[in-house]
Length: 250
Image (cartoon, rainbow, N blue to C red; front, side, top):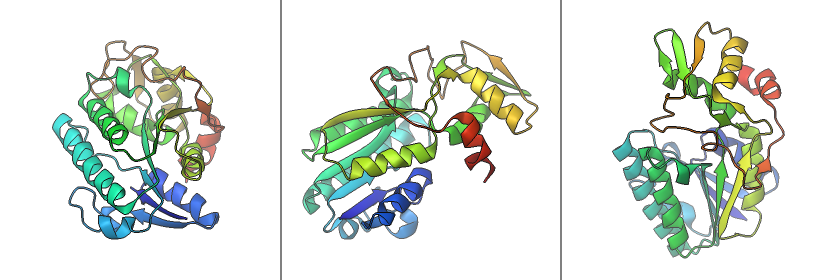
């Protein structure tokens, strides 16, 4: 089966491509650096010719409100139009747990528009809502840094390792579309401020974490339900300690 992965050279895309190729599928890892650009349309028609499944893992290069909205709107429309013309049978997109609850943030408003475009496209689809990747802990710490302190919300998170995400994306690619959404989460629920404290200690970073209920998460105010799933999520297997002992040290 031919599968095109948009954003196929990124963190999740590389791992998903590897898994599907090992199972004997023809996989195109599509990205601007491989000649496929969903914003300009370059190489899109050629890449999707004869494709049965498209996995959209592309992410906006900017969290700025307008830039994110432009990216997901233009990319989504171009990709869905090309997919429909090519007769794609299953469109899969990776999105974020809590997207619909975090609409005071422009990035999440853009992700919701992406999801709405998929639902209205007429192409059979599956949307995968994932919690935050463990690999993004450093970025979360950076986003909350003020001087020598890291101000982060004490809201609950349930981060998932990229290997677990890639396992799910590969399985979804080989399954029938559900015309709906599934949610995936890591195995451990913990407060964001506590988890980043553990992470910084593990990497020898001297910054201190301040649990601040008023701290924004990329522009969004959080509560204990914002970033976790209570919708019977599929749980990953990799704990923070297991992830840090392997992937984080590579």
